[in-house]
Amino acid sequence: MALTIFAGYLIARLTEIPNLLDYFFWTSLIVGILYLLIMANSKKYKREG
Image 1 (cartoon, helix red, strand yellow):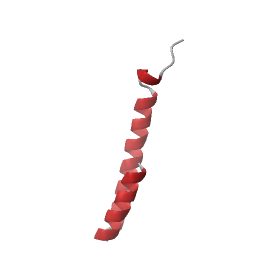
Image 2 (cartoon, one colour):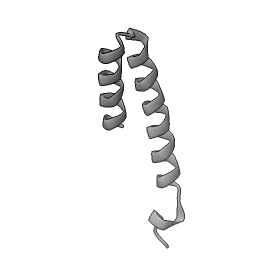
Image 3 (cartoon, rainbow, N blue to C red):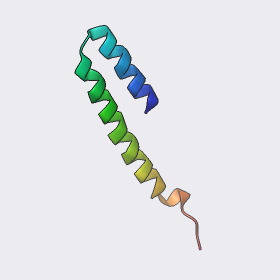
């Protein structure tokens, strides 16, 4: 998530499009939360018992 936000920051600075940083931030946040939810509910990390 941090790499995506940092890449968005750099691209926004180079292209001088301020809204681009917001798009990268929200996209990385949504993808990161979905990833964590999927990994937390996968059978690989569940305890038996």
